[in-house]
Image (cartoon, rainbow, N blue to C red; front, side):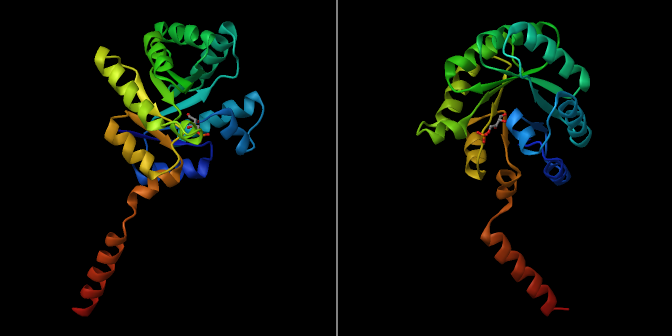
Length: 217
Ligand code: E4P
């Protein structure tokens, strides 16, 4: 399972990269705005900075919603760095654009996916990644993890290459459950990855080992 971090914060990306388990980064317009990164040129420069920190795929989202606009923007983003994955919304023109990008060797992440049918369409169009938003489904009392399981079943039935990128991961249990179901990738906050470290018996055991070592020396 690949671990992506879902942020545009360079310090957090560095911290996750330093841990040695990071496989990539996802961003979106809201995450960019949260870091105060505005304006097309600043945003592009920021993507390049992220690519220089992380050794892996970096999703950069288009703003256009019409076919021609998505193609133009996506081609510009893809040229920024060879780690860039063009993130395209699950809309009709987005699906058409994903097919174009796939035919032209540009990798994509189909975002804002909330149903198995949408995920099937993204795979048919040749998306590299599909991003079902599990946390946002949980927010409206719908089982986000069940969607990951449905997509896993469908993709396995037909041998689709599209990777399931569990997005809108909110906490460590989401990460573990996605791993059990067989999501190819998860993207979440740094806290969801660092939470995997924690167990009270580890802390108690280490404290005792160190105390016993001191006694004998
Ligand atoms: C996916 O790529 C999105 O950036 C993200 O995971 C959305 O998460 P949120 O629902 O916590 O905003």
